[in-house]
Image 1: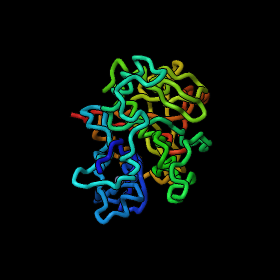
Image 2: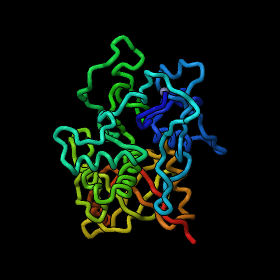
Image 3: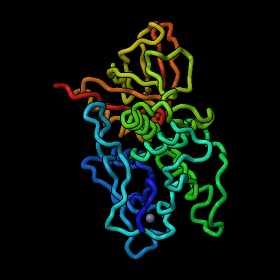
Length: 321
Ligand SMILES: [Zn+2]
């Protein structure tokens, strides 16, 4: 059978585990050079028991996100040469059963937004900030109680899978994935973009747009936003680094510090290093991070710290000419 839903997880043959597309990108860049692309198969246990296991194509997870000449966001795509099992999780219809008609209680604008979102390569319904403990959420009753393959505890951290197979909401803890979704929906949906909402764990449902804040609008000691802004790597201190934003915060020069310790301990450090190594080639970086600016008296500057690399996503700016 053909898949009907957007594929948000796939089984990586080389690593022997399920990955979101964000997890695939991180795993790819964590390899030593020369890196090789992965083979992906359908994540459904029913499909993986088939004689011919359906392959899944991972698109653009092996290139760096850049601001200009943006290629399509990384995503998984069904490979049309393979047939899926009738019980495959991606063959089940979407929550709206593919309806083009307004759903009960939906405004005209919400219907248009729902239909427009079908053109996106990925959709995120729930974002769990990486430093926040997973909180219990109301899940739909399990369809097949005898199937212990995907119990409610079937979760992994980082780039692993979230939620159950019957839960059709896409949930992620990956900031990079959230940034990709933000950028793609902003650029694709245009005037409908303000209608796009997201459920942020600990916050509830908010407009996606309102969760992102440019550094220039940041207020000191205020958390709860994905701050973003362009800038340059100021200096590297051992493995750590200092990033200097072009914009000021509360009229002070603004910096982001990542300590030596954080850079040597975290499992995605190689991926982050790989991006920072492009500093000579690009005019600037755009940093997205979850954190807080605080006033640093000795230097009369505003400083934010990232103590968990999962709270940081980096876009490469345009190449130097
Ligand atoms: Zn399948």
